[in-house]
Length: 296
Image (cartoon, rainbow, N blue to C red):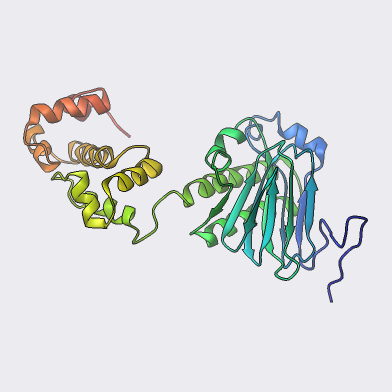
């Protein structure tokens, strides 16, 4: 049986699990990386993989210098931030802000398997903002295999030799990993009402539809659908549909010889003057000027 390491606080351990992977960058190298142009914006200081980590526990009453990201693959555990505690279960991740007192532990009867990393840098707060700014710090993920592959790549770069090149490579992958985590739980899942609404609008670039009609089609209230659009895209259904129309208009202006009137009709504008005004409002140039610009 996997016996725990005993300490004065109970049968816990911070590492030492069978088949674990653990990378701790020497702190002098971390400090150097935080001033290098290629890594000062984001530096991975620690990363690892703890499989079936029975009796795993970490407690930091004063928090850590880094943002900590933990991804649970199997099993379960608990993450305590201040006075709030959250369950961490398969396909979920938690982000712990730097300086936040915390404690986390694996459930002894269902020990978790986790990937984790610590990151510092000038852009970490902004980059991890969508994760750290959430009212609920635990997020469910859909593209688990892609996230795991990125964690594995981060660890791979650091576990063999810690050179400036390896630090740069790990930073680049970590950047991708954080953006993946931030967007995974926001972008709509296949078949969800939001995804179906987006597909409907994409298929009707040459037409118009009211928000209440679109909401009825996907089985939501207009207010709920609008809230989902704002969360995922930063704007409502109308703004999303307009962005699709403008993207199609740019494509037609760049790749065809259609007249401005014909382009306008192709994206649902019966009045070419109104289309031109709308295009200029979005692009700061009219369609004819946009078409004449050199691109590529």
